[in-house]
Length: 331
Image 1 (cartoon, rainbow, N blue to C red):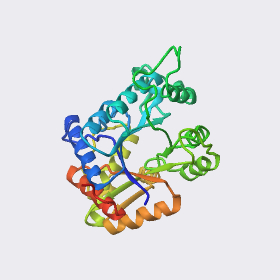
Image 2 (cartoon, rainbow, N blue to C red):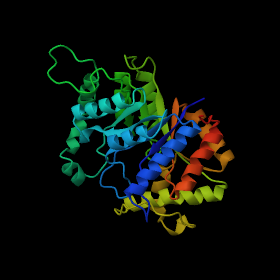
Image 3 (cartoon, rainbow, N blue to C red):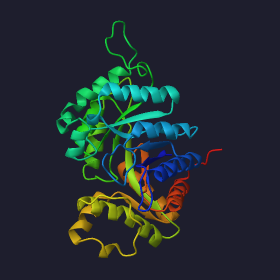
């Protein structure tokens, strides 16, 4: 059976705050672990009022410390924002604290706007150095050699699986060339998904990291006791996308009954294109939709995300997805 995993952004809802978002994050991670999900990943974003996962490595440590078995990682760390040595040190530390449970996914985008990138003291042109930065980072995880001038302490010789993330062909080609696992951001940018998967699988070169390609796809999945309620819950994410494109990013809004009255036709078209990889409905709908998605695209792993306003409803959504997929709850 294809493993299921969770992607979380530590969402901050209207009327809430980051401390509540972090409490919900850990509660969801424990919930997912109990349901049998394989990984729990957090993503780096900056200057986003509705996303509290900016200090991604810190939150990974918090989640790993509050769970027992589920893998915890970054989906991802935006490498242009950081020096490779610092990332190696951070994740070498995490993997030393929680051996065998930490993943490091790397993205090429800054995960923010140009002004915030400048505030981070990194620049958009750093993305052009992404392949070299990835190679440097991988080097820091190798066992230190005699006379090596710069070492990651901790980090050298520590097992940290490194993934490349992407929404285009660039990272697919690089992951194939380096023999790394690859995760595609199909939950918000699916246009190049099929082509990226084809390139990655066709050009993959076995490496010390993997003998064969391993591709993970992200999918929006919102479950509820009825199809209409699932559609209503999904309007929170639809509104968030529209607000972002209107230049007014904010906290996650509550669902609304009539999404058609909220957006303009061109906004609807853009959001539906961005969120095309979405499955909504009751348990039967989720089972059929997730199976059809996997049959068409053949991922090795599926990472689910659900930006549901009410925390209890969000927990319920991941429960329904787990049941639909036949996951076995852990003792």
